View (cartoon, rainbow, N blue to C red):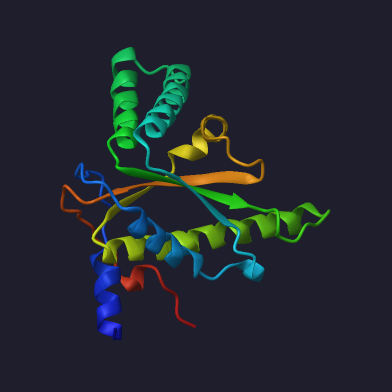
Length: 201
């Protein structure tokens, strides 16, 4: 692979939200997870953890738990019942209609521990950044495998429900989730100019 090939992969990746019913093989899942494993990480601790939810019954349990939490949050915000149900149904379908859901988690178990709050907070940020680096590897590998993926942050609002449904280890902190499968849509994307995002010194 040359630099042009790499840039073509990076620039053609899109967030995909609609998937074919076609299953994703364990071999493909293992390859894209292995790509994530080779990301850089703080102190080379590799604090990423992944919970792969491919079984339809497990996705149903997740969807119900997450949707119930969303319904309660929206009701507390005072949204009309009809709008609440629209949001809840959309959130439910995002999980159950995806052939695979991957929960993205952080474990601080092997990261340095400090008594000083500012130092410990910095270590936590390093852990979050490490997980994000791993996910980017996974996204690109999935794209090369012909998969569509969407990175979703909904689990940040209901981590306890997800932990309960999946019986996650105590040190696994939910950071987000990926829905993935073979695309049933064409993704669209644009980017602002480089000049809008960079300062040169």
